[in-house]
Length: 356
Picture 1: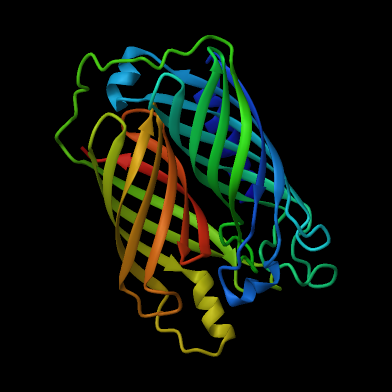
Picture 2 (picture 1 turned 30 degrees about the vertical axis):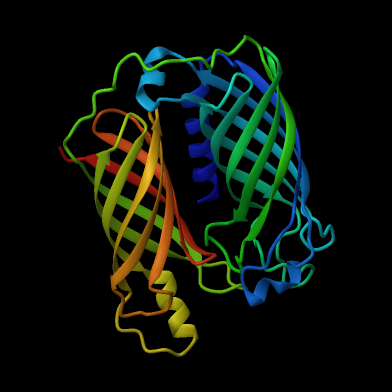
């Protein structure tokens, strides 16, 4: 499973950036503070992860892209290092992520952006029942990395800008292996951006992008596998089918609604271990959310509720976050992280087919 995710990540990044001119580079330091989202994760209270971040990016400054979102779109690759604040327990982490950032001009020198990261992280102090039993936040060396932030840019000359960002970072293995309480550390990034060419943020929208009034209907199949407890290495399959509708709001934003059905062998095994009678391992949920599109890449977040859940093992409310890549008009592939409150349930691989 891990190898498949790494291959998908490489193809995803390459397909977006190959052949594109890198138009800027930035370097930043970050200061954060971890917080305990559950009582079981109280041991991380007081941890203050610190790190460094290098970004390589491109501004999508064509008139077509500006017309689509009424903004300056920015995307690229981010490389990050974190000292997670408790060297003997949490260790160090190295992250590689893809980011997308719509930017908006507030004045001649001041730009703001909403920045979303998704990628992978290598951390060197995973949970081990013998050597590191106290780390309940992650149990795989390779985990998922997600971040969302508000960026503020102030230009000190035509090609150079100072950057102050408020960002929320999240590390977990997506439920592939337990324990997996995850590590959340919001904080501040401060850095310097250099553009190889002078950016022109004095754009104007010359025409409204054409929005298809129809709702795009997708059928999606997905697969995941996770362990039944903290000490097991055997994985149990999770299969699912999803019917969804996507309605464009403008050239970038879209709304989504979905009906999902799950066959969860992992939670069935957990119930057996807890000596709970298992009727079946099926669940059904409905969810709605919002997302944004940049070229062939899509990112969407949604909030859902189970309408059929005889297992009743998790909270009834869940949230999920999907990145997908459009292979052609009909087919797309993606990865999706599903969680209940702050605890990740699983990370799945999915194939999507456009019905209309």
